[in-house]
Image 1: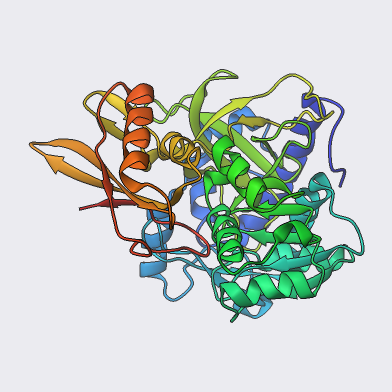
Image 2: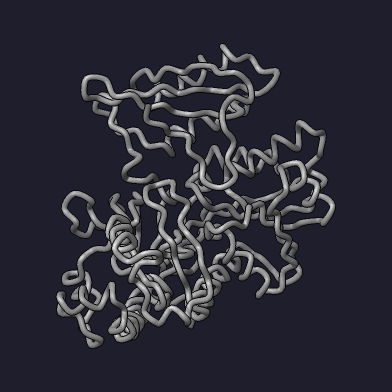
Length: 426
């Protein structure tokens, strides 16, 4: 399968061919076969547009209900259970925990997609990749580890190590690539500074981040790259249900290409469910074209994106481009006094202040309306009150309203290895 196509028509032709093959396989899938039959979709589906018009959405609630009705793995299994060799589950940060199984073929499909991510990032045979990840049942960087090994990298797992141990492993093993969440890249950088470890002396040239939108937030990228001198941040996003979905444009930091060689992507108005025009904001909806063992069809990701398509990117690709990456979860956007407040926008403001060690946003409902308070943990030795004043002023300047900033004690806010949970409803 080619990694890119000469134009949009070639992309869509390939997607339709893969979709037809997928529908043929799903005749034995207890979850999707009835849905396809009811929608009148056959292996001869005429076009992607016909598929989108006829096929109902799949939501996380649908999958959770199916898991409850068919424990422990649900019924979205195309083949007998004996064909499945991989078990993972979702992180549980956005609702019910879902157990997910993959066949060797579906797992290989995900490794291929991760190879595309790494090739775009500039990963080469002989690189030494360190994975600052627990390697538990959450899918996380499991597929990234397998893809890097297949590409000829020396892969070093960071499970069971604390932050200090991981920093030491990075230095001792002359690691060239670090894979972790944006939050944890910051945490490792700050911990190294506290321990007197000079990361400018490390060999790390590339930090591939995933798990949260921070990799495409300019201030967060800049913060990471200052803590890790000489390293470039490269963003990626995926989901347990979808697998690797996007990779950063090599020529445009902060913009993600959808892996359209493997995923049929739609961007829809979340209110009307109708397609938006190129350049408009909408919800990313995805169909996995090669994960036949446990696919998702028209899966509502809940991710808000601003997508562009139709023109050749400066990097030479025609794959859909998400400007700013994943802007937010649709259910994370908060309306405060008539103003839409996105977590990524708040993160960009906060991360412009290097004296901020950590932060958290508490959401309170008063008389039926939401209000926010930002809890701020200053770095050791910084002027906390002055910092709080500056952050509050910047928030007011962007959102045209006061968001109170409350100082908290050092080391009082939680640190996160994979997905951060900074927005708390109280």
